[in-house]
Length: 428
Image 1 (cartoon, one colour):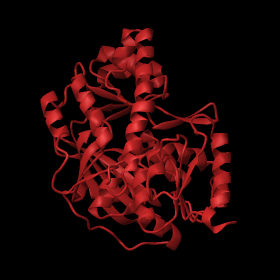
Image 2 (cartoon, one colour):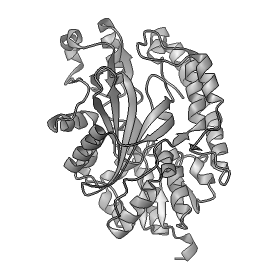
Image 3 (tube, rainbow, N blue to C red):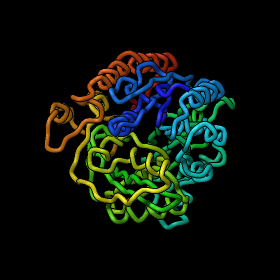
Image 4 (cartoon, rainbow, N blue to C red):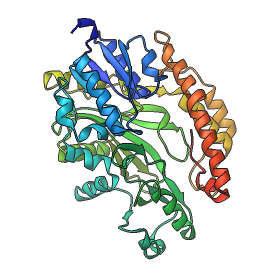
């Protein structure tokens, strides 16, 4: 095999901010990084630090074809480390882990049981409850017919949440389960629940937790925490709840640190994870929301603040261990500009009917969006030294995501106003 065809690391799901951060981190250290995705406009493809670009079939269409393409790619490149970036690719590979590991030096993932617990929010809640970690009040139904029994017992607004972000369909595809739905009155519960149930069977029903969102990120070696980092969300893509468009590094809050360490130790977690909390405005108690059992989309902030999780994971995979890394700069901000534009669009559309929590004003959202400079402000993708990924991100938004969003809205309009109302709050 020719030396120039090899790669040190293969990174999947190259469209994501986290994949771009991994490519920049490792490529900037002189490692040969191959980026792979199912779309041609994946932003990490256009980074100066990307040594090779590979397009594979989407596991949302055929896991069988995805695996075949990935195996061929790995046999050609023989990378030291494979880093899958999303639940979709991890789930597509989990059942054939031995075949993957035969083609790479290392696949730094936790055990299948740990992954199942982290990816299933119902199982995450059960584990947290057994460890005494506060969670939102949660109802899990065995059958939609139980709705009438539980409807009077719930507090409103209630959050109807898919148990998993991705799920298997027809045995050969892993697809997104879509966003949460909010139910504001008992009489709305059947329609709202069934709207989610159709795309994500037997979702959870949770109490709504008002307050700020936090993420505690970690690198673990078989349950031993080797690195920690925390951030709080300043602006979300959807103001009603989603990933962040602007976030800030903070010192790890003690109660969140304790809960994160207990969870990951109980799972004997190996690799990276981000544990999400809401700091309950009513009583000041941090409540666990979920575990992201892979790299998270706000990863560029951690790297900018001084915790280079991609390189730490590479060292863990290739050397077996890394020194502890708990020091970083608090007060660092990182902005995803395209995500912030999507936030602005959501605010300009107006507050959803019946929304009870805080919601930005249009004037303030415009004013904040126009603040492009600030002390210790970094950006996820616009880098002067590596500008092309930003333009790829904009192209992906305009050429792929906007047309898809418009098509979905037209379809919902044809199906009836009630479905359009149920879609309220969804975003690009």
